[in-house]
Amino acid sequence: MCQLPINNPTLMKPINRLLRAGIKVVELNTRLRRPIIEVDRPFKAWEQGAVEITETRNGVRSLVKMTIWRGAHIIWR
Image (cartoon, rainbow, N blue to C red; front, side, top):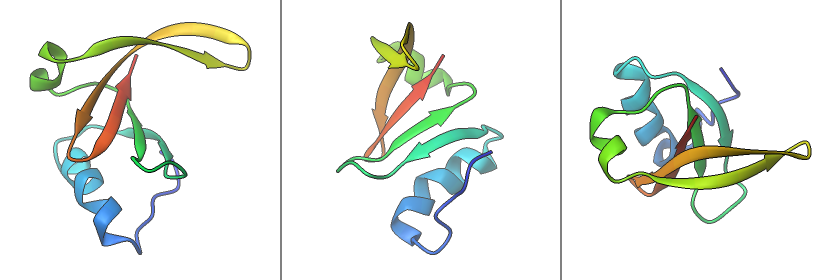
C-alpha cells in the first residue's frame, strides 16, 4: 500500500471506493492533471473497456491495462 492523500477528499473518494471493494492501491501519482492509480486487480466492468499501454519503468518495458474511472487513470498488470 502506498501513501494516501487522506486530507484531500476529492482524491480519496475514488480510492475509498476501491478499498471498500477489496482492491488494493499499489501506487498513486497525483502530479498530473488526472491522478494515476495503480491497483492489484480490476473490477469486472473495467476489463471490457480497457486498453493496453506500454509502460517503461527502470528501463524495462511492460504491457499494462488502463481505463479511466471517476476522473482517474486506473492501471493494473
